[in-house]
Length: 457
Image (tube, rainbow, N blue to C red; front, side, top):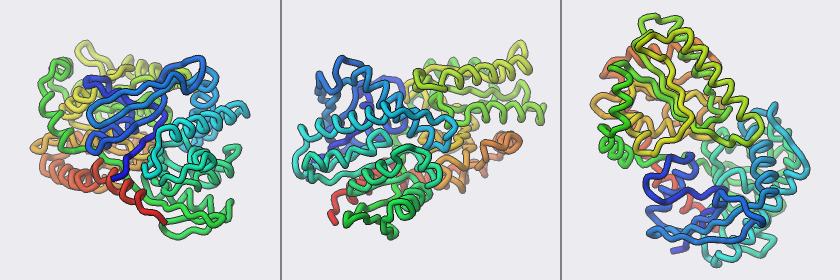
């Protein structure tokens, strides 16, 4: 069997007990635990020169190969083009696009360096699985180095419409480089259609349902919704249901019902919109005042990227205003925490809550929605309130309460319905969603993508 080489911008820590990481890192780590492989990427450190020194770490059947970035490459590749151009545009926030030529040059340089690192490690029959928007150019540089491996790209975030994608300088160069992969995977059919539309209209590519052809080169395409390990999450949430952290949480609630949200601090997550939706609930349904608490866990994310400090300030102001308006001596409506918790603790928090609230303005998948469902007790499950703009809504629409995050009153109505929902309906909805999670599990995601990557055209 071929080895699997995984490349992502960041490599998650393998040691148990680490704080929870983002959806990409969690998904890749859990996928590799079963089959093993090599995981390569940036170690999060800044050095004098990108790529050196390179370190290797073994943990069971996973080998980690990591290296630092130089300050200049971090500023141009990561803070610059990846997170000040690609991230906002792919999340339909062209108003936040901040382009500089030096940043695109850094993006090219780091993609080329990653290709060189891959070439040093890869055997001819290795399958190489590239993750996310940081490496849209990587296959092109691998081909220039003479590598003939099967190269697959999985995009964890949404792909924008052709009109939005064209706001990126060098959009055609990026798209042409993407077509050097052998397989491109997206979270939803909408994302796949958006890439297909752009390539047909502006590159002159020929499309069929599962492939694009340009200049005689064919790239296969597919929808691979990333999943979770529902049985593992159920077990973890049960085992930690009486942990000290959960006891503290319940003690503070004083038997009030709990609405919970967990997100990285990011403008794509609709954090301000959900605060306003909760405020609307208190405005329009006075009986919930003093009876329901909202806990928002939002670890800092890309705090040195333009715009994120302003977001944090706005959230703190919004939470402060709402709490100032409604707080009682024994009740604070919103508990807003800018810190991380480990995964077992988060899963046990999900289990202890009555409502999970996800209000993404645009999201590739949103694994928090799936983790929330998987963590629920089967005999008394909570209710998921889910944005229609999260990829997870394509799969969980029959079980979740679907909302438009721009509709403040609509969020309040959904929260009201979730808090008043009877046990039989909650169990029916939960059972429906669990069936989807088990069918489209993390293992199924990995096996489908790797199986398709192995097939040569």
